[in-house]
Image (cartoon, rainbow, N blue to C red):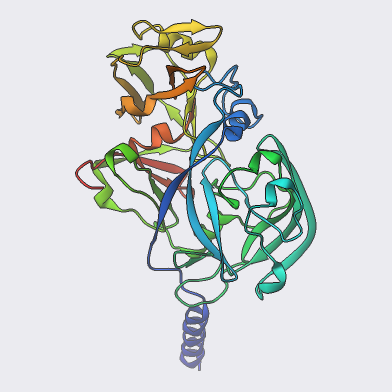
Length: 388
């Protein structure tokens, strides 16, 4: 009798295990395109309270109207079979998209989402609002399982089609800051590990990756290309493209529960190591510059021949050549000079300003990066420059 009971118990356990939805078994690679946006994100990250470091000034860019643009990276998604261009931002934890009810000037030329056309949409019966992009974002919260990004459905098990959790929590924006008006993206897909902007949020996009994939595939990876080299940019969900880097993938600890912030072990210029102790670098794919505290910038420019300090705005001759290295996990990573020098027009004169501890795409263009929130690690590797 006991044997029969044990046999029945084993069969019941096997049936239960088989009934559980299996995790996704493949990765998804999404091409990214660079587009020009306003400098509002630079203003946001340079002055926002969420910065890991108290930044006095963003010394690598002008915070005046003289330089009114930045670059960001976009991918195409579909929501209920409608296409949207969204900016990806590792420094942002929410997913927002303009609602059909958005009457803000910034929404006029953007694709809008109508929940009536999405059979998977569920309202959360709550509003949300926060300061972002130099203005106020306001709307209602909802969930959907219709968000598709190159074959990956967030919140929907991609092997079985079974809903793995409550779907993807997102914001339907009714009020959008005017700074968005001339930017080419429709919404923002945040890749931070949590959404700290919303009270009692459901699982955000990255938390859905953790739900949809098994360890060690609860990750995403970024490769940011450089137009001058003809290299492509891509986001890989649930895996790593080992062909994109060479040598070892060096793991470093994430020191923030929300954002992808890591310890920086050192910084050198022209072989001279600068005494930057205890620096924390927040990796942000939504803007291009490396933003550093004013005092650090001053020390950096002291090592650059003929660099000048114009009341906190540092400039240098365009023909200057120097070598910059950022040390992470005791490994030096070179920063290409072309990413640190940007030639722009000011009063009909060509000047150079440093696009350089917020680590934007100036840093990301020089490394392959892997984001593993389950194990609180970021992997950094040197790029394989033999492939595009």
